[in-house]
Image (cartoon, one colour):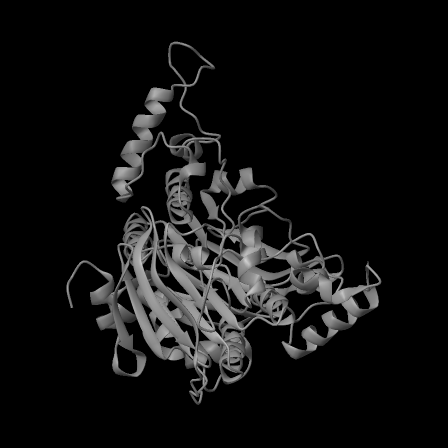
Length: 511
């Protein structure tokens, strides 16, 4: 028997593949899961959503055998399953792709795909057959439609390409259930389409997929059913809606989110920041634009168009080959990030854990690290003032942390992003370069980040927002610059454009 869902997709509902009941888990006495439940059918694409900290990853790690549950039951095809280890989970046919990629950087694509399952030579027991491994990896990648060289070391791949290697490894290893945690967060639009094709292919083979994501629009394209977690509990389970996500958002955040993209009175001041003829060899050429105080300008384009590289060059992380940068009408040289910081500039990077935060340091230390000079007293760091500053920003930005001494790596993605923003606010930056500001952030935290960005603009800051989410670009910006192949090919007035027009300019198709 099958139950129809939207889009003509059907989800089989005979004997459940896996059922989780009353799952509980605490860390250091703090409950993370408080009786969560979830059922997954064979060959079903099942969405799992919820705010950061809701317990999604913990529940999936329990299903993947990576951590032990404190209480609750797991059944596999109607039989009790202990899932005491990852090995036990893999023996059942369960594989998990983590949001934080788990690859061996020094090994090749092929070696990562077959890691722990390497083919041996029949004539020489115990000797690996690298030629066969490369051939099998090539066949696997071709079957999935991924254009990767199996002999390339993973450390030379982009973040998006590494994600594809993780997907290939999971598809190779599993037969029954693949768990994908935020699989599209670093993929381009075309790579997302490739991933969806692979997921649908798995479905036709009878493999179930759990799709953990914050992107409801993407989930609507692919999922049969959806489960919502909030504060460690299951608060909704049912068919995935095709377009109206109001009920899901209410279930996730426990309230109505009004004015998701908050209205803003645009009060442009003079030009605060401009670039002229900015170029970097093999990355981008002849980039020109200006941003006034009080204005938010979007930078759109496909992954690889050169958007992040432009931001890095403006901030002095990598020097430009040609071109000029102006702040308050005066030409400035950005040889290092310190030059940019002295000019009142802030870069909120797309990979906050690697380049935006010091994960092992406290929340308070991360907030103040870009402006330690302001905390000096007679040449020594004033720890009381540091604590005071940390507390002020915790309250001002509603950063949900146990205290300012909590390690920042233990915060949710949304709260980590607020800490990054607090760091630059304490530095009193006036020019903000946001690179994917809401990547990996739940809908509730997104709404709060949008509000903070609007407040910055209303205070007179100049803001450049790089985003792959076109609804975000259209909801937040005043103008949109579209990049293609390292060049700004079009400037659009946000209120007068559409997603379709932006995509036409971003792709090879001429508008």
